[in-house]
Length: 116
Image (cartoon, rainbow, N blue to C red; front, side):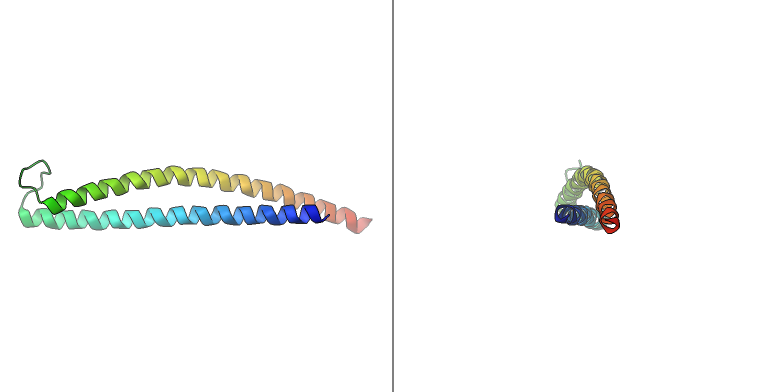
């Protein structure tokens, strides 16, 4: 039953690929979170230097304003990646279930061939 063996290998590959995609998403999210924290620190330093913490103030530092916009964009990206992560986790669960079924069928067929 070569077709069952190849099906099991295909399903195992799909599970591995889904795990890799999930890890990439998690890595990107953690990197974006790190970058956002660094920006928040830079914003805080810039506000302390200028003595102005109100972004709507006419003399608010331009760098702080740009850094705040970048940090906001990173937070939006993190939320979007979270949605993708949830979808990837669901796809991984489905792929693992399909792999388990294929492996069980292969094991069952292997046991029947051994008895024959």
